[in-house]
Length: 312
Ligand SMILES: NC(=O)C1=CN([C@@H]2O[C@H](COP(=O)(O)OP(=O)(O)OC[C@H]3O[C@@H](n4cnc5c(N)ncnc54)[C@H](OP(=O)(O)O)[C@@H]3O)[C@@H](O)[C@H]2O)C=CC1
Ligand SMILES: C[C@H]1O[C@H](OP(=O)(O)OP(=O)(O)OC[C@H]2O[C@@H](n3cnc4c(=O)[nH]c(N)nc43)[C@H](O)[C@@H]2O)[C@@H](O)[C@@H](O)C1=O
Image (cartoon, rainbow, N blue to C red):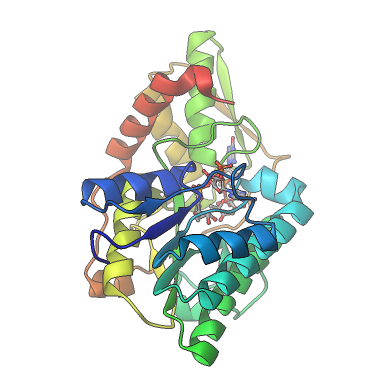
């Protein structure tokens, strides 16, 4: 990308799109194109076509999606499948039709089979059944990967796919039920501390293992891949390190300064037992994460405190 290239960030108001926008601005990119979902609903094929025909972006960071944690994925199953599929087909087809130079599609680590060997290598895609709680979302994300691959195969489009691990950071979603575990627990521990509650409830058994990457690191990785990677095969983005949900809860408890006890609500789903990314390919391309989990949680908590009155 040149600093003057026209770059469309789909989903710039979200956690990831926002981080990509900040990172591009810091790097001196001046021609960024952004639309909110009110201004451009990516589910509307005609609107998407009109936008690409008019703006003719050269590069696209595709960070718009219907996103949520285990409960949201499991509750709004049709919405997660339909909305993600339709946004992907609209955007990727328009990127082909209006000759976008390069597009980066963001998937997720949930595309891998529930019981795939660990760590998850890129080649494990479509080698076994998916986790039930997020199967619709995973299927939509797999379709996105296949769209990038097939438009490359048939039309020579330079569309690449990156699979981030679980993310957290600046501008995260702190909804009590629909968010991911890390922001959910920041909020729950914080509110328990403020209200002197003796116990905080953690969903599931606490035994599932998860890997977490800070949003600003992810943004840097996306821009790095846009500038340095042009292959058909997807690339994992993560840290290559994981911990149990119980240990994550203890870390957040410490950061927030909550003094009470934990309990586990085993009526809530655990989801995939483990999804640790193999990041050797990413390291070979030349990128490594910078922010360790302790520091990242501290930064995320500070951001939460700044914005807490605006939290949904
Ligand atoms: N968060 C995570 O842990 C992970 C996220 N990812 C992937 O990263 C990407 C970004 O996720 P994240 O930033 O966390 O999600 P957010 O929910 O924070 O942001 C999603 C963005 O998508 C936009 N969007 C949603 N629906 C539409 C629509 N119909 N038309 C136009 N825009 C729409 C929203 O725009 P607006 O604000 O204008 O409404 C919003 O800014 C997604 O592809 C997600 O799958 C992958 C792995 C983990
Ligand atoms: C990024 C990824 O995100 C989703 O998958 P997930 O990894 O299961 O995400 P999660 O963050 O919601 O949960 C992680 C673990 O944590 C436990 N857990 C404890 N207490 C809370 C809690 O309070 N909230 C939540 N959400 N989880 C909790 C929870 O039971 C689970 O064991 C996918 O649907 C899919 O969309 C996807 O790609």
